[in-house]
Image 1 (cartoon, rainbow, N blue to C red):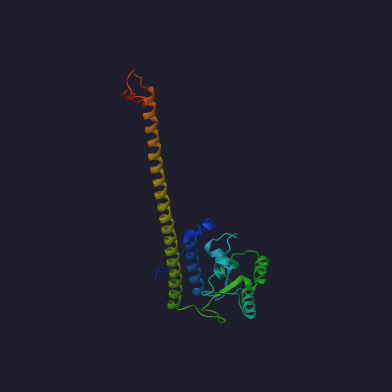
Image 2: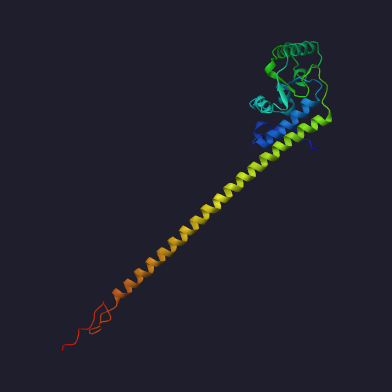
Amino acid sequence: MKMFWWGSKMQQGHSHIATNLDELDLISTIWIIASNDENHLITFEGIRERLGLEKSYDLNSVVLKHRELFRPGAPPEELEEWQDSMRDGKRQPTWIKIISDDPKRLTAINSLKQTDVFRSQFRVNKRAPKSQIEIVNWGLEHIDRIRKSRIAARNANAKSWQMWLAVVIGVLNIIATISVAYLKGNECTTSKTAATASQPIVPGDTSQAGLHPPAPRP
């Protein structure tokens, strides 16, 4: 099964995430992380740090749109236990480890709330192990089905617009043809009238100006 890694693409930040299809690539990567990370609790800040996402990117909304894959929050006691471990220097995610200032690191650990974390729907139990490859592949295939359905819908919409555009162009062509024919007809009529009016009238010639010879006397 193909895994959709963002890698260097995500280093471009929020500007690259322009479409729903790009969003699904992001969800695929997050799904893999949530399935295989040492900690079953995943922080939004950790995902942001790993993938190079900007602060302005609404990562929470993107993840929580896929509740079939991810479960928001964590039981309070699990979060507290994890915070205790991090205070002891254990089970620290990378974004916590790279904070060099001890007081700031401790503040970051203490400020974690339930809304700052999420889990895979298949790792909801305390200290849940990594997901089996079958589960990981199921999630990726599920995301791929969503991707294909969106592509199909987009293509159907494009074809619909193309059909209406063809109809409009056809109608405009018909109107243009009729207009040209009408204008040419008017030009011919005007030319004939002008030519007749410009011809000299010959005495006794009754073929011009619509004259008729007098009737013979009895």
